[in-house]
Image 1 (spheres, one colour):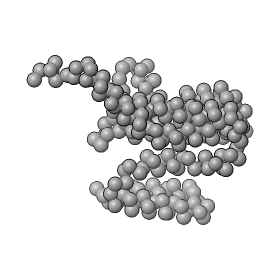
Image 2 (cartoon, one colour):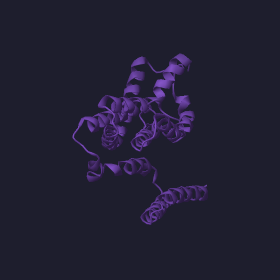
Image 3 (cartoon, helix red, strand yellow):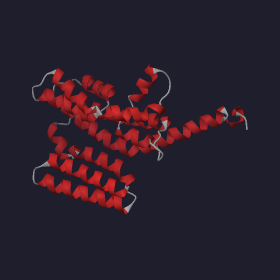
Image 4 (cartoon, helix red, strand yellow):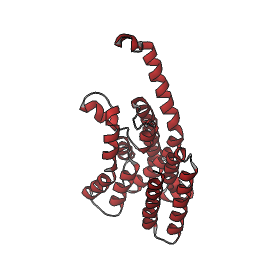
Amino acid sequence: MTGTESEPTPPAARDAWRAAWAVGAKAAVPFTVAIFAFGISFGVLAKGAGFSALAATSMSGLVFVGSSQFAAVSVIVNGGGWAAAAVAGTLLNLRYLVMGFAILPALRGGRARRAVESQLVIEESWAIASDADGRFDRVRLLSSGVVLWLGWVLGTLLGAIGPFKAVDILNYGLDAVSPVLFFLLLAPHLGGSRKRSAAATAAGCAALLTAIAVPDTAIAVACLIAVVWTWRAR
């Protein structure tokens, strides 16, 4: 078979692209619901910090990383300057260097195009785009990233212009959205009994340590349990 014969025809390629796009967009919907709610809480916090709706929404559209945005705005709320806020947000974003190196082979074009596409790389789109063999599907990354981006930006806008107040974040449980997001990411990978027992042990220890007011230790212990379980499974 020649190289020309092995290549898909343009209609077949378009159908494959549309199918992959639909898969990525559909997979992003559950995460988008949670991210939309999380965006509302960020919009409320940004409004309380003196951000206009345009500024808060623009920040979400350009940064598109909840943790760093919350950190930056929290620094400003507590009297810090813009430089300190930028440093706090940047430090939290360092994890994307590792994720970026992993997903780089899936991106296309020159530096400018890859830079634009990489803006859609967050934990959720990264996970949706990943395959079992360690490679990544570019179309799933882009489709899921677009859906997630829209949810985050629209949630921020609603929080910034809506009637919500800071107390509503607690009243409506919006502060619990972040753990829910990470559970949604983790749940599909808990197929085996060993993985489920590791997750249950880590969660139980984390809940206990959080209850006795040592949440930082809880995070470290949960990570240690995951590492030990992974090492034992090899």
